[in-house]
Length: 371
Image (tube, rainbow, N blue to C red):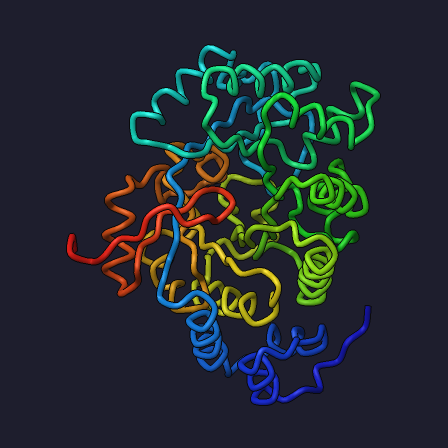
């Protein structure tokens, strides 16, 4: 893929504001623009207001990372442990149910279940996990298992991707995280996670899920060794899939936390907030078929996440309750925000807090009288 940045910033922004589709060459220009960050953010904010009004959504959920034992060696990861590591763990079903019960005390609507690629786990662990959760919590939305986990189940069981997903759905699965995407430009992907599924397999699994009626998120790992051309490829592919399937519920940027990873020596460990804010804005301008752009308060901190609400972002994410993957990589911004605090934060930023479910159905709107 070869593009040259020939477009002028003003013309690109005018296209975006009039809801004309920005092409990949123009996306590259936005990424490479050095001086126009404020203008990009301003137009993204206007466009977001037209799409989502002044509303900012959030979900009351709980993350459950069921194991940190992993047979892969991704260079961006600080979470992975071997079976012999002193702090290695694998949760049994009773402990998972306890964690969900803890979440129910704060009124969670969703659990998000992901873990390391534990080579000792058999496919039945995954199928039974979903079934046991569903049997005990029939009304809970189960958002579980990345494309990498789906692939591992398929490979170990000798089942097709479609059969694995259908069996999980039969057991009680509702939707899937679109993680394990990292960066979908294969050359760079091969450098940071050479043992993970390649781009074609990731796309196959995502498209299969969408065509079976299973919605997913879409993600990117941002701020490591990727180039602007890599980002163009990744976002273009995500937009093409959404054109075809309309299966992505939101786009989530995952700013790279490097401190406790083997990739830290190759990147600037300082997270440049202005670069992140500009990137959020570019997502709003380019991803014209994805309504919801989510910030990441565990990765960039609450003040920066609130600032991102002026950059085209309309979703604050969730309460989480625990977030081991970011913490293990050196993240320092916490793992839990209570619903009441999220509402006050969003309202204090001049936005209307809206509680949603996983699929972005709005549950409750809140006025700002409590601020």
